[in-house]
Image (cartoon, rainbow, N blue to C red; front, side):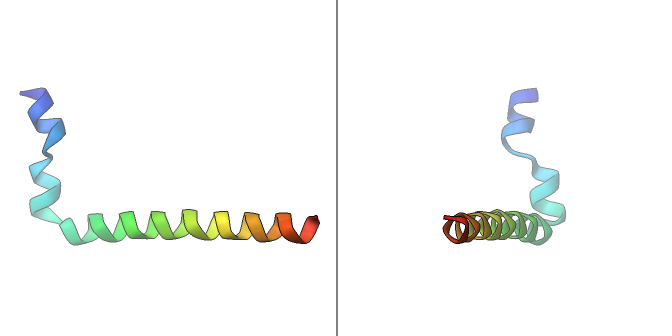
Length: 46
């Protein structure tokens, strides 16, 4: 029961899949920007 509920959260998929996808894209974009800025800072510092 618990494992199936954790593996497939139906309430998230049915209620707001668009918001969940948007959240994932935003997090990925933020991480990408942070890594990009960090690499640029390292290049400028060197």
